[in-house]
Amino acid sequence: MRRKFPAFALSRPARLALLFASIAFLISFPFWASRYWVDVGFYVGLYALLGLGLNVILGEVGLFNLGHAAFWAIGAYTTAILNVRFGVPTLALLPVSALVAAGCAWLISSPIIHLRGDYLCIVTIALGEIVRLVLINNPGGVTGGPNGIGGIARPFIFGHTIRTPTDFYFLIWVLVALCALGLRQLQRSRIGRAWNYIREDEIAAAAMGVDVRALKLLAFVLGASLAGIAGNAFAAKMRMVSPDSFTFMESCLIFCAVLLGGMGSIPGTILGAALVVLFPEIFRPAAQYRMLFFGLALAATMYFRPGGVWPRRRAMEFVTKER
Amino acid sequence: MKDGEVVLETKGITKRFRGLVAVDRFDIAVQEKTIHSLIGPNGAGKTTAFNVITGIYRPEEGQVLFEGQLLNGLKPHEILARGIARTFQNPRLFRNMTSLENVMAGAHAHGRAGMWSSIFRLPHQRREEREILERAEFWLEKVGLWRFRNELAHNIPYGAQKLLELARALASKPKLLLLDEPTCGLNESEKEAMMNFIGSLPQMGLTILLVEHNMNVVMGLSDLITVMNYGKKIAEGTAEEIYNNPVVIEAYLGRSEGYAIAS
Image (cartoon, each protein chain N blue to C red):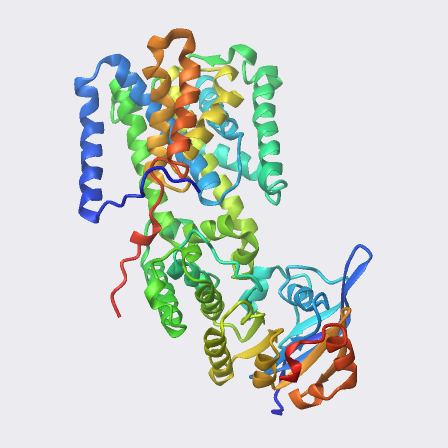
């Protein structure tokens, strides 16, 4: 593999310092940035959440899923339908959206989970499109067709209604932080290692006692449930959902976020999400050439850092005593 | 030779790939705490037999019995949990993971912790992780790869990769270990170290089924040798019996003179 820049490793204190600096930046951001950029910050968080979910599937286990937006859509529509039709509070639907997305993922992926590489990729593209088309066709009159569903109630927590961009900014980033924390614990456990064993060599993993099918399914279900959570937050923020939001392009962007950041890396995925949201914003002055620059920036990033902007450094994780 | 209980027994296993019969009504009985070698010319079906025993392939016919229990239809991970571990001819390591993590894979099957206990670091999960780490460290040190513990598996020398795969298999606490050409590609001193290490395993209570092309290794280590050709068993006996068996010489050496049996 081509490497233009030497791999650099930060020492443990340096990494902690960077972590605290990032947290301080994220907390202070809405207090000095404009409303517009706080909104952009929300979208970075949203894509980070979606990226973290896909990272479990794509980054940890190596399953090519180009239909991740489908689970996002399922989460968003679950929130919209149950809130608008049955008046369930929006925030209370957060775990429900996660569960429904997870359940759908289990149903959808069970028969296809044994597929490998590009075959799985093609099937997930189809699934993403099927979900979107089903939403457009308004089965049983529940999804509202191409117009979607509007009038979703604002979420409230402890008597405080979440309404401003700043409120939503904090909502999404708290969710990102909690998910990132949980996923980090999983990475450094027998479950996370088993996922990586499958990614590295499926046959050897099976021969070493890893239940490949069960762990692949777990990854798919967990990744989809994070997308379901993202769907809930998205529906709450937009106050309406429509099929246009969940196109194949969105699945691609989430895929890019994981690839760009570094497959299997949690900080990398968050950074990757920031890049896919920020690149088009930065190139806004270029008007109609915006997407061209966006594409060039993606290509350049992969050229200079083929392993991702912030790959996971495994060797530093086990600090074993000298013998 | 020692007379012990039969640990692994195959009865008439057959594996076909389209028209090719790779393993043809093959029987083998491996006795406890012995080193049993499986030899034969290239393409004789040795590796396929391994893949049938470890559940990677399903046999069309025949039975695989381990400690008297039928293994047919079990998945590879279930077979490992019963106590059969293996290595591969070309090391199949988890290349982008550290040596230590590779060996930890062996301990995976003995763990119970699930997703939630891993996220919340429950006490039993912490205990289990500590045990996995300790066991991996033990075997890594035992095969002499301690200095590579934090190196990614694809960055360590080939000989070390072979040993790493062995350590990974041993960390699963197997009763039976299937080794597919463990000395292939090693230099003389590495070969000798590998031989000595394998030779010491039966004393630890392990049974070894060995596929090997290097006749010095086979003759030096084996309690019993089974010879395969065209998927069939053509001979079985001690090193000396095989050495003098005309059928074996014809099947084996007749095709490729210069093979190392004469040394």
